[in-house]
Image 1 (cartoon, rainbow, N blue to C red):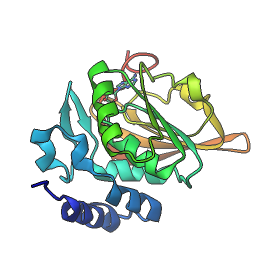
Image 2 (image 1 turned 90 degrees about the horizontal axis):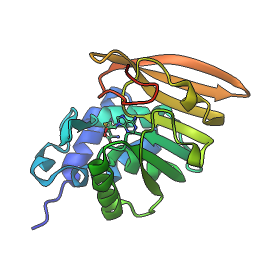
Image 3 (image 1 turned 90 degrees about the vertical axis):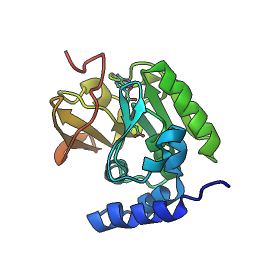
Image 4 (image 1 turned 45 degrees about the horizontal axis):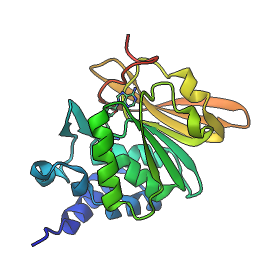
Length: 215
Ligand code: SAH
């Protein structure tokens, strides 16, 4: 029998997202559609709707569902955007972003995870609008720039300015900034040539490697 996770998924959306203030209807819909269990190794699927990050191997994690939803909500996607994600991991957040935007390019530095993310997305993503690129995304990915939105899924000591340089106008970006032990989610908004930075919730992500990341 194929296990049915839809009840767990509905409960996650209600308890972990709606009750904590995620209100963007498109984000709530995407989170209730994308099968998170499909992005975890078979033996870890039991943890798919847990209220926290889960190890996915190679020292990396799949983010807490709330964090994936919050980051997506901060990007205020309407459906016609090109989005860059840095740090595909298993591809889950990219699938959520793919359900919210026209096109997603996600860069992953661990070669094995590139294969995992591609396989997971091929199995689950109806639109095929997510491209997984292998490489160091700490300086962005010039190939498809400018972007309407950028989501960085690994923490940096500062906002990498090369990423800001790949934003279109208008555009938004989210990135965890701080030390290895703890960070704050920074929200960047660009409009009519002006860039605003806002500090959001406390968070803890794996470090962004290479480039302008950790020294
Ligand atoms: N987006 C994932 C979370 C991934 S965790 C989700 O759906 O939950 C962060 C990922 O960033 C890890 O897979 C890690 O290998 C990757 N990463 C770290 N530094 C990177 C870099 N410079 N370029 C691309 N990926 C990077």
